Image (cartoon, rainbow, N blue to C red; front, side, top):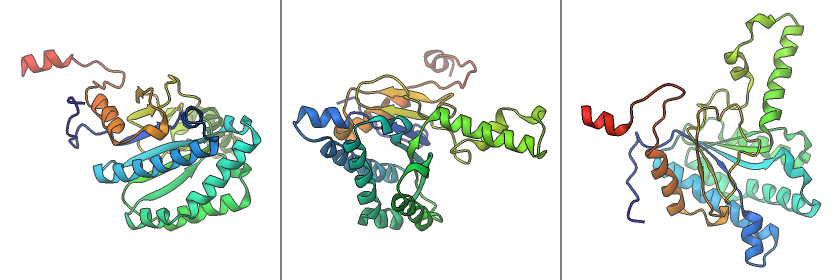
Length: 253
C-alpha cells in the first residue's frame, strides 16, 4: 500500500485495454446469480471510465463480450444482452456525453438483436464529436476475426483491381484492422487470475505491456487500478529495440 506513487503524465499509459474477467466467480463466491456478477462488473466499468477521465488518459478499450461468449449458457447470454440494453439506456450515457467522452463499439455486431444494434449506433452518434476520453467497447469481438476480416477486405480490393498483392504490407493490414485510427494499447490489464489474452486485440497487442491480477473484476477498485498503473510506470519499453537498464542510465547521468 505504501508503495503507491502519484501519477505523472509521462508515467501514464495513453491507451489501456482491459479484459474484465471474474464476474461469474465473484458471484459464485457470494452465492449470487451470474447476472448479479455482470451487473456488479458493469458498475466497476463505469467507475473506471470516470477514473480515466480524471487522470487524463486518452483511450480505454473494454473487452465486454467475446466471439466465444456465445457458447455460454443461453440464460447467461440473454442476461448479458439485457444488461447491455439497460446500460445503453442509462442516464450515465448522457453524463459521459456531458463529460466529453466518445463511445465506440468494435466487433461483429450483426448477431446482436436489432434493438441492441440500434442502441449502439445511437450512442456512437450521440458522442461522435466528443474530444475527451475515447472508450471502445469490444462486443462479439475476437482478435482472429479482426485479422481475418481485414484480410478479406484487402483481398476484395485486390480482386477489384484497386491494389496489387505486392502492395500489401504491415501498414496495409494496420489500416484495415479495428482501432486503426487509435494508438495501440500501451497496457493490457486482465483481472480474475488468468494469464492469457483470450483472443483479444491480437494484432494491436504486439508491443503492449501485460498486467495480470488475481482480483476479480467486480473488486477492481481505484486501489487495484493504481497498482496496475504503478507497475506500468516501472516498465522499460523498447518496442523490440535495445535500451540500457535504468541503473546504468542513472549512473551515467
